[in-house]
Length: 237
Ligand code: IPE
Ligand code: MG
Image (cartoon, rainbow, N blue to C red; front, side):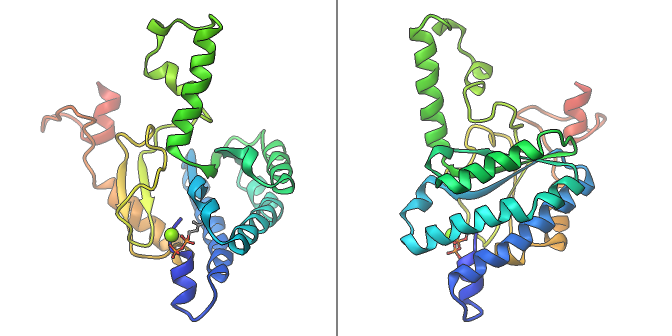
C-alpha cells in the first residue's frame, strides 16, 4: 500500500491525511475481495524499515492502526473475514498489539477470507527469524538437518498458512518489492498501478483482477495449445 504521502501532498495536505484516507481503501479492498470469494489477502501495512520514519509519523500510524483494529471489527464480522498480524509483532506498541490480539480473537471463527496485516514486517527478517528457530530445533534434536526441505522452512515463517499469492499488486507506480513476502511470491503475477493507495478502490481492484485473468501461468513448465491454460492446467496436471 504505497503512495499515501504523495496522494496527500498532491492535494496540498500533510502526509498523515493520506494515511487516514488509505484506511478507506483498506476497507473497500477487503470488503470487495471477501465478496468476490478471494480466500486470502495480505496487506503490507508497515515494514521493519518504516520505523526509520519521523517519530511523529510513526506515532500517528500506530494510533491509526489501533483505531482501525477497533472500528473495523463490525465490517470484518459482517464479511466473515478473519484478521491476523504477521511480522515482528513484538515491536508494535503495547496498546496497538493488545488491540490486534483482541481483533484476531474476535474474528478467529470467521471462514470467508483471511486478511493478514504485515506489521513491522520484512521478508529478510522473516527468513532470519525462521532460520534461527529452525537452527534451535536442530540443536535441540527436534529436527534433522537432512530433513530440511522447502516445506520445512515454510513451517517456520511467521504464518505457515499464508498461501503463495497468485497476484501481487503494487500501488503508486514503484517497480520494486521492498522486502515483501520474498519467499512466497516466487511465482506470483505482478500488477503495478500508478494510482496511489488512497485512490485505490473497487474500480482499480477489478482492473488488477482483469489483468491477472489474462495472464498465462506456467510455473516454469510448458503449456500445449490443446491443454487448458494457466491455473487450470496446474490443477489438471
Ligand atoms: C504508504 O504510503 C504507507 C506506509 C508505508 C505506512 P507512503 O507513506 O510510503 O507514501 P509515499 O510513498 O511517501 O507517497
Ligand atoms: Mg512510500
